[in-house]
Amino acid sequence: MRSIRAAATGAVTLSLALAATACGGGSSTGGGSNDSPKELTYWASNQGASVEIDKKVLRPELDKFEKQTGIKVKLEVVPWSDLLNRILTATTSGQGPDVLNIGNTWSASLQATGALLPWDAKNFDRIGGKDRFVDSALGSTGVEGQDPAAVPLYSMAYALYYNKQMLADAGIDAPPATWDELVAAGKKVSKDGKWGIAMEGSNPSENIHHTFVFAKQHGADFFTADGKPDFTNDGAVTAVKQYVDLMAKDRIIAPGNAEYAQNQSVSDFAKGKTAMLLWQSASANLKSQGMADDSYGIAPVPVQSGTPGTGEQVNSMVAGINLAVFKNSDNVDGATEFVKFMTSDAEQKILNTAYSSIPPVRAAQEDAAFNSPANAVLKDTLAKSAVALPQVPDESQFETAVGTAVKDLFADAAGGREVTTASVKAALTKAQQQMPKK
Image (cartoon, rainbow, N blue to C red; front, top):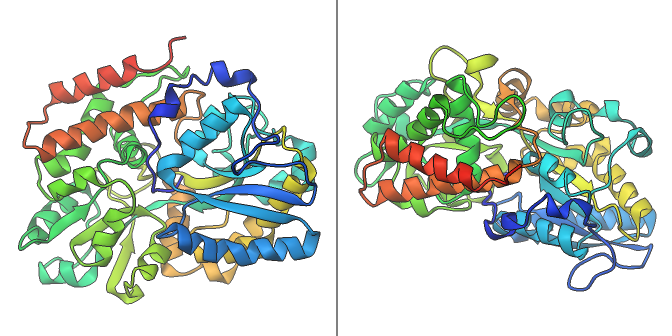
């Protein structure tokens, strides 16, 4: 899922268990689908530096689809701060679009509502077959053993983006490969109004992505093997504290980052206010903000020690965007045609180039356009050292509960309040108490 990306708190209080029999799509007003077989409503997620940039990327492609099929696509680009809230409301009200982008980490949660079209073998055959997609992307489309709730659209991985000149001026001749090296580099850079690294402390989804990776590096997870919340185990507590300590203890993140929620950290990096950035497939975003390609480098996200790999050397979640169809859309055939178009080899090359992401479609991923040094880091990470977030029905509630707990801990750090192992465990205990009772 893009980062981007605050998952709104309020809608998650709508129990997904209660929503299990709800239907999405259907005739609606105010931006939903309609009765015309020659029209679709599409909610796209905000992938670029702004909603307007996304419209400029997508509109020509949607017009191309209309020319080919005669089906007009009504586009709405939904900010990440609103997207989950909007989707959950649509699953319970029946007032939704025909086709929509979802963060791939939400796949299992939205699958549990029963509102999305299952992608069984027949539906996959209508878009060219399931084997067109790479395995890592398919691993984030829903609960294992069930028909996927969505189809992969964009694949992404986290990387460490670093300002070459700022590190060189601080006497650092190589990007940090471990967290100790990152902290040391950050401390050398953090002076005269500059900071070591930018984060988005007020963005629950970003908080989840990073703390999930830290937990994996400490041999832990936030769920047990049978899918039950386990937010207060030693590894999870250590992971959250290590992440927040980049501000609270190491002081390499500006306190103001505690209030950052969407794209501000990318902007600070592009403007030279911070030396490093952890982000998903950021190149297009940085270019749109005027940062020259040769002014920054891209390296794997640090690990505790050694080099990225499997097991405790995981350094990214499997990030990405999936494309879903509300199953009671009045135009399922047209929606399926649209999914086929968006996941075609040609469109995959165009769209993933525009967003500096990696195509989840095998043939497109092998195109020379995706063999740049930047993409090599992302592809290598996805292939060797990235793991999907838990594909459990309560995943979206987890993102909100734990992501908000981390947000509050960043607020403590920014306000000068001590962040301790005890305070982290208390915050995670409160988060676990907010999860649906079984």
